[in-house]
Length: 505
Image 1 (cartoon, rainbow, N blue to C red):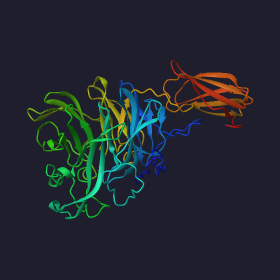
Image 2 (image 1 turned 180 degrees about the horizontal axis):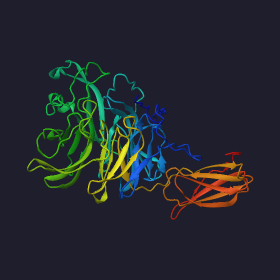
Image 3 (image 1 turned 60 degrees about the vertical axis):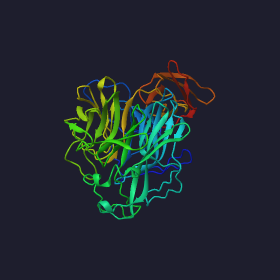
Image 4 (image 1 turned 45 degrees about the horizontal axis):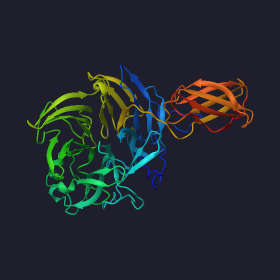
């Protein structure tokens, strides 16, 4: 079963915790913290790029959250629980921020969502909530949308250099489907995208696939996503387009990815379709050594006149067709003058071929490294400049746990929350054990422990170098109360609450 939570309790959204059915994959637990991140199974065979791993968990995951973790399986930060997607570091006003979708995810065979995009600062405080509050939306017929405060979809949250955000939306509406064998008064899930001012939520650009059905006809999608029995009511709309990424060219036009058309479309400033790059036929281009289908995460790189590079996550699998071709990352050169698309590089691990039926992304890193998150397969892989896989991190079983996208980025976290401490008596050793953690903190290097018989007579009793998310130290004798402090160069120390020592560990 695929779970989906309600909106999170931010900006009036209500949170529902998700209980996982599958508890086989191991997770970590701590004495000082309630967080329970997955146990990363990491293998490395070469140098990797600097930075932490950023990813979400869904489907039958133990906890629905987003995570920052290291390659050494150490938790850095875990969010409160919620149906969260697309977690990554971006820049706003020249400063690093964290962004993710927070809302209601509708499971396959639909595969979209309704919610907000949160923007967090280095202290993990929500500074902006990007939303679309009213655009005549209708939700999937089986969903009560009366409490919805925003209609943004999970698929995109890219911040542009102009301080705007590109987001997507899904609107259940009616149209004539008789040209492809469906009902005349049929139901579809229209795909939309917006460019929105992050700080004001002003919609600067809006585009709808249905509005351009003359340029992107329903007949063209039938070989890849036939209508079958879809479209007879609002509970089973025909989700023929399925937008899953938006990026922006330097000239202000856009490129969007349609999963089921197996196509990339360039959208002009007036909303018309400038060209189509179809993964099987080429569309308006000639393909040279390239083929892709059911792709995600189309990104623009290295624009130079009439030429540029596009990276995609080529699923080559879907709920319609799967198991034949493996999933891979593709880098391609596009020449508008000659209408030629040429292969630069494909990326896949020959020792671990993956068939990802949904989701996924391809992130270009420094020194020509590439990180790939495998969507419906809960794995993250990094490839070096030669295309060799140098790191694999797995956090669940295939087709049981999913992660919409995964990223690697440097990050400095300075939380405003206090460090956490837990302490107990080891009766057999006659020691006081102290457990210390600080969710999200990256810069402290040392812990100092203060203890005493009462809460009013605390004195320094130990100092210990930080050893991962949770650091443990033992103090001879029996203390009644402890407090811990986190120290590091150039940061304000973090001081925990005074906590009583438990009589027994």
